[in-house]
Amino acid sequence: MQPFTKFTAIAAPLPLINIDTDMIIPKQFLRTIKRSGLGVNAFDEMRYDSNGNEKSDFILNKEPYRNAKILVTGENFGCGSSREHAPWALLDFGFKCIIAPSFADIFYNNCFKNGILPITLSKEKVDKFMKYAEEKKEITIDLENQTVNCESFSSNFDIDGFRKHCLLNGLDDIALTLEKESKITAYEEKISKQRSWI
Image 1: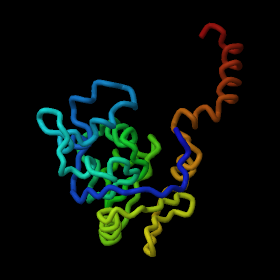
Image 2: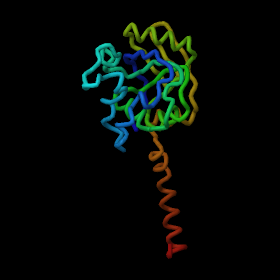
Image 3: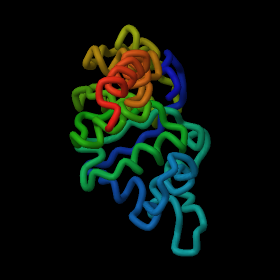
Image 4: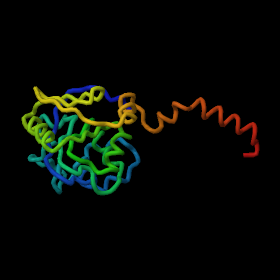
């Protein structure tokens, strides 16, 4: 997992509530266990018509939002099933941060495990950043200082200290386990000697 650093980018405005994981990545794309390649199908039914052609009125099919790294959206984002393919698809599209008034719990947790920063702000603050996004203004995300900035408007956000540490250092569950590799190896060697029949 890549370390999460401070960055400034275009944000895509998606002012909808209750966007569920099937809207983020429809069920027909869940046959893969690869984390890559799903970005092209993120928001598939909103992005494409029945013939696979882009819908010109959908935000991610417009410039400059095709290259957005931040998504500003409505309440209860990521509700529905617990599919981890949803954050995989968003990350593969290019999103590094999602700003919303609230998230579904499982989706929220899955974001951290995949290097995406979900930021929860009050609806009033989200609406402010939504307006900036609609005006195609860049937003700065600073995880170290826990701030979101655009022009003269700035907001702090809360984040669990351990999750912040993991994002800043690019540590997923596997990397956290490998930090204890020497202890695991020592234990395995000890058990191998004590219980050679295992």
